Length: 171
Image (cartoon, rainbow, N blue to C red; front, side, top):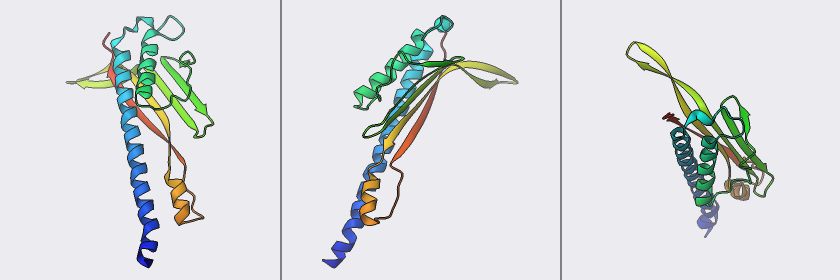
């Protein structure tokens, strides 16, 4: 009984830690898939709408891909406004930060003019691509469990996961 009483809290901490880490890893993969699909969607759209002012259709399409992906995976979009993008050059950024509980942090940056240098033989050429960056907060459960084992322990309760994807502009 004594051995069980000593080992049970440690076992619980390990199990919760494993589940918590796997949840964070799964979320990171879901975000990577959303970024990749969003970059492909925007890169397939024509770039002729980029100078018209407002939010271009290609950027709006990329936003909708991410938003629909989050909803399909039962993840919160933190109430981000689809018409509330801020523009800097050829990058549109959507962001939301709600107090919670749990707190929700989400940021989506769509860069339709991402330049990558590619070496072809002796020449180096610039290739215009679309880059999508997603940042999303993951709320850890491990913090509440570790304080049972070590009452004075402090553990960060939230981590912002980041992912990025790039796709070659098709036109």
